[in-house]
Image (cartoon, rainbow, N blue to C red; front, side):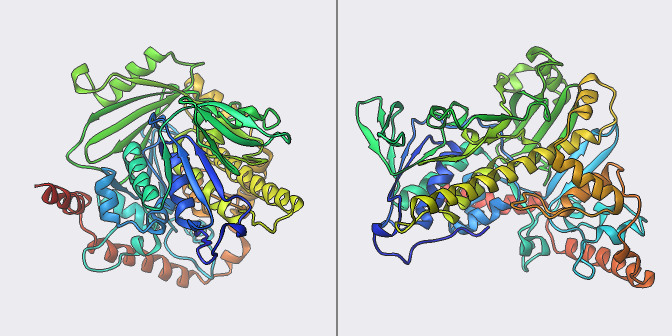
Length: 517
């Protein structure tokens, strides 16, 4: 979704909310500030952020391709962004041992191969199946070969479609966003909220800070994390718990020294009671274990993670940090004059790196439905309803997509059996019935993942439809073979133009060293 802009308007009388106060910093607060201040004219709207400097919980350091559009929207140079966030590139996710030990599945970003008659390759591949579906993805081929998404002297097909993302330092991303926010006129207040002031109608009119001062606003954005300082004052906006679908409620994280070779993909490895991530940054290696406290203790989880990553000396790593995870969402993310974003709005375990995407699309959706001064109370209510509907649909789809990974497992551990047996939403059941019959998927509003993402996951774990769709069977077999061979040839040609991931990273990050010397 492209970020909307109101820069052509000239005064504050055009917008219903000319004073926006963001409560909380971290990536949620600063991404909200950066996008709002970029898209709304200073002459119309004053943005204030109340940030006590504590930042976020820092679980998510991997992203999906929407982050590329964020960097472009904010006018950032990608090389400068990489240096500022100690970032590496990401072409997809490798899932190790999820179905069973020794089995690997892939979720590469972007379209698989090429469409045939404006339809996804999947149904046509299903009629052929001479090689894995994901093997027609240029991203998969590039990831396996350790390639960068960018060619040196031309525009690669991966870069042209923006089908890549980043591994990054979340704290440094917040700083990168802060620089752009301040440059766009965002006022920074470095205090903590002590009290919330409401008017006679129950709407928030101001927040009082720990130094006795106050910040007034027309619209408040709650980016205060799981604490939900503002939204928690609205008991009618209860929390929709998703812990029956997704069983993991804890995470243990560690920072390890950087590896010389940095894979251009995230690794998610099945563990006894959850899964472990492995994210290569320029300055370090971020690892963590997302698990269910019903099946493993904190000490057991930390020991299992240390064994997995080969840590035998405590001096090699920081002390393991433990995090509680509350999986679910608000019934309504926009209530009266309060919008929740980030963890205050909802949380899904970071298996598909969706956390930053939810923050970004939350702000983009707010801009889409931002009320004007001419909006009546009824029309503003309609805008909030549309916002909340799209937000809920998107969040629930991500929960379903993450749960699908667990549903497809054949592991024997108690956690994995319980995760496989967890109840499915009616929406996911419907999608699977349609897929199992003819390999088709309903188009979803506000979808975070294209159809190819589902096909990668389902086919990669051996769940195939009973038969291909009728339209795909009508394609001439010789033509199909020609197209499939052409896709593989195009992918091979594209790979020849791509430098190794390490080579391109050294070129980008060496510029930072040269500037500092």
